[in-house]
Length: 481
Image (cartoon, rainbow, N blue to C red; front, side):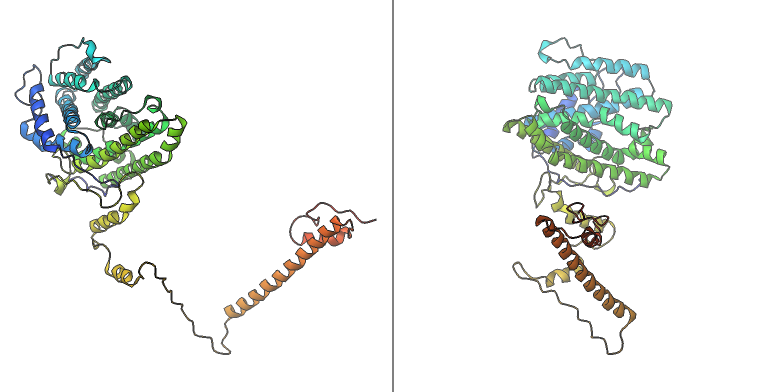
């Protein structure tokens, strides 16, 4: 099936890294999927078979989590992978059961039950009996996760999870009405109810870096989360456009939103969405570098608390890089020639982390040149020759002067004459300036010695300097008696 547009050239300032626990996570999460009923013969009434084992393997959610959480320990990586299997299964299950049938009432009843499986205190009990794989998986995941996190994290993560589930109602409502949202509404609503804020909460868990309560709801942390969410959601919309528009009948996609709102072609719409991604990544970098240090001082965070915030920011950075790599390989998305390629855990040869993206500009430029059909080597032949002529370190470069032949006698041009006359005027103006300064100095000395010259004499000198109406800068001088 041909792609509706070519993938744009993405801004990728961070290197993607791969967690060495990938294979262990793959084996673990498949067993967990069978245990909860996500895979295998459906054992619950009114629950269709959403995924086959081959489809599950091709989507490779363990690879997603190994890319997006490269530093997570094995236990945390396994649990995070189970969370992502659950959330993607929920999305596809909701599509099959409620979106395709436009069952709004059934969808509301279905979602209303899920909040009961995330109680504030998991040890208190009172969880209802699960009746489908989504409920069974959520109950298991929450019991395994909440015990390791504090009350503030549990409150925030529960809110993000319920918002993520409510997104399905918003999308179903738009599909039912045939209404394509406008760009402002779409980005604002997707930022609030999309999956990226939920993913940011799992970054805190995987990095053992819960954000300190006193700063978890401050503006800089909110901006970081919003910029991260926008980048993740918009990138996903580009890669998933073909599947959502052609297979699912989805209209809640940023490419389609801009295509409909601006009346432009799909390629231009995809390029503009990519521009928004780049802008949001720049905002993320600026906020992390410029606003976090003052925040640390304002709230007097101790070194351990500051380290947790920075580990969280680094985790968001790793997620963006790894999420991009996974989108290039998963069978779930429009990724052309990169689908199914073996994962590569590339490491940057230069510095990594916030504020170091400029070190990778030459690589980005070479990639863009290669995409446009230009030579993809380290430099063009002309540049290579120029670099060979550059002096080594510590050697002062000599810049040759260009000598012009002297003009022949009697061949001066009008420009030559004008230049000479201009130089003469400049010298005369300089001489008048010196005289004016001398007059002003004499006027000041006269005031200090109380030997005041006539006002007209002093005023004329100062007035020519353009300082006023002929009055000296030290004030109006009175006529000497």
